[in-house]
Image (cartoon, rainbow, N blue to C red; front, side, top):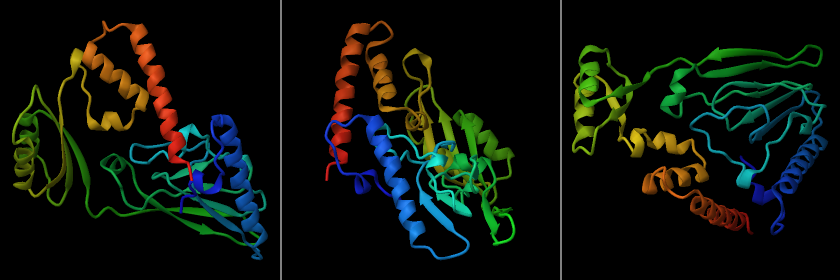
Length: 265
């Protein structure tokens, strides 16, 4: 399970992020030391559910660090260990360090359509007292292919008519010139006639300035970036910069208050 920051750190009002980061890292070191002191096995394996420096976030993982807290580093991990298995990141990742292997095996199944772009793996780990750790990657077979398609209504209907969609799950991104009714039903029916099943239909409309902003774009932006985009959408590029700066200052103060309330006991 994920060790929430609020569960392992006493709350200190108005604490600087760098100080809270250091306390979090020290707490994780202490927890692992306590685990090791309770072990009597010759081969020691540790697990954890957190983000470690050197890992890479995808689109579907939730950033679990609250209030900008920094990730754990490899030199925070105990040295007298044979293998460390980590969870939270959905893709296979080998974290570089001077100690034992530190691995995110990733999720065995894709948890978003974005993750369908790479193979899923499980790791077969061979540990012994007299041999080095051997890691074998095993590719998880795909029984239902996930496919992403994008285009206008006419483009998507053409793709449906001329493609092989039998037993495939589909995410469709529909590019529209303006609001439209029944888009989802039209797209789903077109692919269903060819054996596919559309699970997600996302309509994308142009915003001010002609730039496209989708819900997927929003997921990858910070609250401040979304606020700035909204301001430009309402007032255009000609909006006064001094007013935006003042609003951003107030907005950041509200974010800080919200973060403090999230971790209060």
